[in-house]
Picture 1 (cartoon, one colour):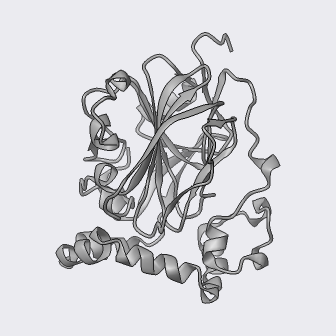
Picture 2 (picture 1 turned 120 degrees about the horizontal axis):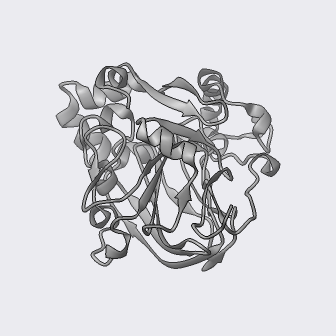
Length: 307
């Protein structure tokens, strides 16, 4: 796990699953987040910037204006984003918002259609937490969650002892997310809340981000994997969590929704014994490393699949 000094320097240790190389992730906006969370201005800024959501709405308004186009190419260069993956050319984006919610060429994110394979819903940095207790710690220091606090529901005991998959999206990522298997939506509800950042500077202070930020919770029934919670967590700069799938049933790989501007997180929780994660993912999580994964990538299989 990255130590405090690494977090203060604005770096996170992430392992690229394809080549098992560990790299330090560049964090966008580190100095501004340090000002907001580490400086003497924090008591003021936490109300003016985060509690009301006003700053996020203003930022969202700006990203939809044509003038925001000038930030697209500097962002691409700063974060090293591969434009060859874009479905539409860079010059076609009329605003930073259009760039941020861009689509990718579908052939670059294929989903394994074997019904016993569980796929990644998003491009992200993945952490696994097996055997969830009454409360559990996420891989960034000082963050403890309960399923009740995450969902604001008291009837989720069946997920106790289960498996959590935490997908952290950063500003460089493709911000649309998909269903990991076939299935159906049993219930969905929204929880209003704050607009704190999921930036490491904020996380290391132990702020209750994943139980206080705005989020959308879906209770799903997944083919071959049983009940699952799919939680979308908003953050500072995220003008909205947009649900694009409108039908109760879904197919693996179909788009579920997207995050508007900002860095955000998906949390999936499955019942105990429903998913056998691939060994390398368990290895990386045991080492305290987030693993770079892509939408459609195999993460594990159903226990009785024999794969």
